[in-house]
Each structure stands twice: as structure tokens, then as C-alpha cells.
Length: 101
Image (cartoon, rainbow, N blue to C red; front, top):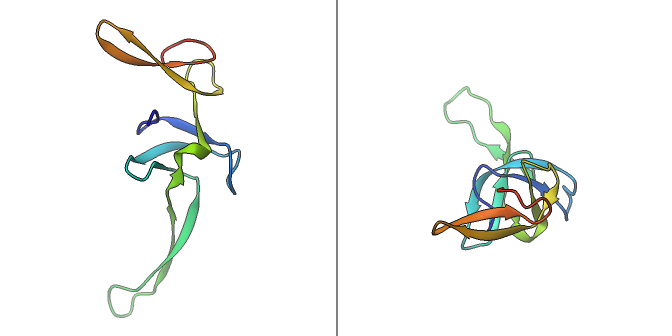
């Protein structure tokens, strides 16, 4: 998977189409990513102590990596990624501007 933790992504399909967010977690086995502000769901929490009230908490849930595109930090557009090998290191590059992503 070409997307890593800390990348900024754009959702290209689904109910959150057009939203941007920072990747919080990458689930490689399931081919999904979790990003802040994208694909939010509500979870009802029980009260822990007596006298305390229950809460409704909004949490991000995983979204398929095929429904997101990386936003290049240089050209600030949603792009596909490629790889280039320099000095025996694999570097991710932007397919639009050719710069390191």
C-alpha cells in the first residue's frame, strides 16, 4: 500500500466524497485507512461510575484505500504515486509534478 501514516488524503468515493483528512492509522491486511474527520460514526458509551451519564462519542472508522487519493505536498493536488530508486533507497514520487511525495 502506498499510503502511510501522517499523509493527507482526499476521499474520491462514498458518503464523504471531497473531504480531506490526515491518516491516523493504516490497516494493511484489510487494505483500509483511518483518517481524521473522514467516515465518522457515533458510538454510545455506558457510564463507568454510578451517577455518571452515558455519552455519545464520534469516532473515525476505516475506509477502503481504493476510495482515497494522496494529496501531494508540493503541487497540492490529489495524485497517484510512483516509486523511484535513488542510492539504493525507494522514494515515493508524485505522478503529476515528479517531486518527492
